[in-house]
Length: 255
Image (tube, rainbow, N blue to C red):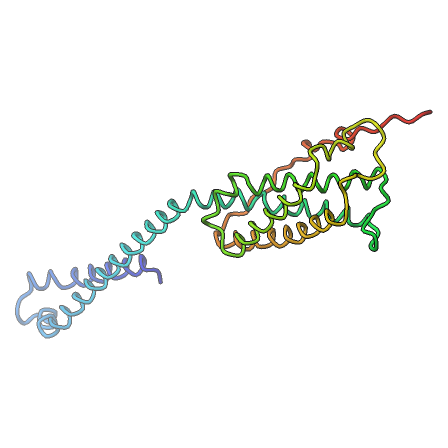
């Protein structure tokens, strides 16, 4: 039985007792059976009324406490709203950015000879290593963005430690790349046989970054769960996709 329903029952019982006893107490005469009954059990009836009044008072106090607790929860929710919005901004896009880099690295690593760590250096492999490096470049920008730095005070130790580690690896990787490393896939001439800046050291940075990015993505997902963010339905962006040929146009073939 709910507290509200119990309060109504107690109120009705008290009203019934009063309605049954007050007229007799006020207008009854000694010798009447009902009057004598009330006279005999007046202590019991008074006790019942006192218990009813106490139960009603307790019920009202419980309802008042429940309302105060609800108001307190609402105030806590309001005070946490800025933090939840900051968490939602990070949790929504950063794990996707991290996993996108991991996917670009995986696609490139599948083209490699496992002994020499060198691909065939055809057009596809040159483009893929540049895509992986571009993804690392964009990932570093994300890691340094205001959306991420504004959540530093909310990150737990593991997330913050891996975030700083990934920033360090990405900075070291980009320091090994020339400013124009992406030009081969944007130029119209034939793709060079092998980028001069690629070597085993660069591959090692790409590989370590991929591992670190995967771990950080999982940790951010786990960290965000404690904030109980409401699930968001991803918008349909199929009409927003830019065909790859629009970015890297195919050269016309003869005949």
